[in-house]
Length: 353
Image (tube, rainbow, N blue to C red; front, top):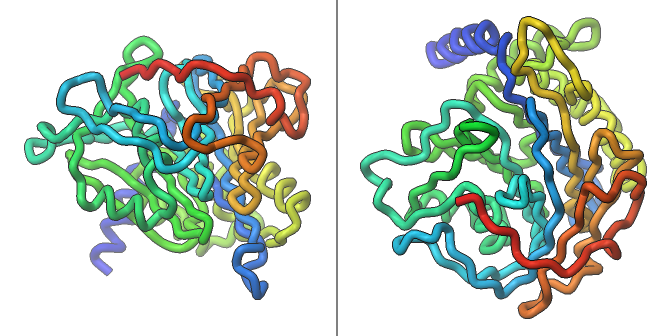
């Protein structure tokens, strides 16, 4: 009871402090009908919005397995050869925002102001850049449990370049695999906090995952049918995403399920060019993605494009020795549907270490 009271107190403080929060991204996991006899037939789509106050040009890259990579050009860095091919969303052609690998593992990076990655006990470990951290997890792991094991047996320090005129890359991560096993990963004072479970439905930004869940518990008790919080702050988006995700049909039909998650993501998005005189730093949604884990489809929706396109990982050569492919998103204004054929051979992106 004491712990719950403390969480509620922190939640109230978070609600008050989030009124001017300009950091915005949302992740929602839609799950189909889990009562079917074949668990492999269950539809799971991770919807995600990227919201920011200035443009973050993002392109789609597909990397094959078997590539040798480094986490940082420093001598003492993490080094690996990728086990799995993957599709990445790459911001500024310099850093991986999210992605899905050929085994159906999905990793989403969301802004989380205040994250502190290292402390005295780990700052001298082999270095890993935030620009490559999601890719490293996707390259080397097939399941959420494998990711959790890597993180709990931590042998890396982590950091990254600033962006957008000096903004610190403070992030946390949502992870989901083909079975629905999920984890939320947050760094606090150099320590890794992992919250794991089955089909964890929603992640936004601040406050920390336990606190924002306490806020959501408050609204669950209220009900939500007659009143839901409607601002663009992180707690309000979390509550709306949770409520609507719970109160929709759960189907394994792709067309219907995709329409459902797409409509939920629209509800938690921030209108394009949304501006408030008293909050000049407010963000608006730039794009939304849809990782269909069952069918290995990675969908992408730029808000000022005409529709949604997707890359089908089943149609791409992900074997060692295959070329890196890139889709220039700036040229997809009227592209709708399967865009796999539009991927072009391209050099690997240059990480913003």
